[in-house]
Image (cartoon, rainbow, N blue to C red; front, side, top):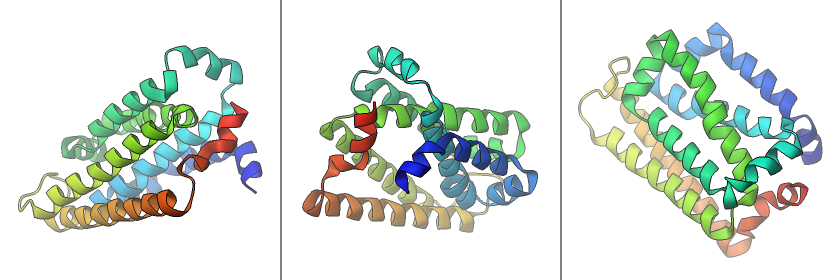
Length: 199
């Protein structure tokens, strides 16, 4: 089943991207801060991750020189993620067509795709640092959104903002619990062993 999904990963990416572009879907996913930040953006990241399967192996090998151990791709993805976690960026993407277009291009191509290429090349320590920072980001932003009494996004109400913060705290806790289980009872580096072998 997993092999089948990998085989048709690029097709799934295209279908998912087209679905996310549909105006009714865009409206639903930008109607609340929670949906845009915790559903639409992760789905766009998934599109980029799945596109990794469509890249020729020669291309992946050619860029490996500047993507040693996946560090460059990780930095690119992290910086781009930081931009799209800013309230001002979420605000603009919900109302301005140009920012919405930039989001639909940059999130898959500058977050999802670099992560898809870089993850198999990351060592145990680098993967741990990445996941630890991901957990930290969810906790930091979640706490900020929960305790801030004023609206950080003009398009979204304080209640929606606080709800986003609560969900981010829950997601951060879930990732932390998953990481602890992997470290105690599993192999942390087993997530992409097969993909690493294929590269």
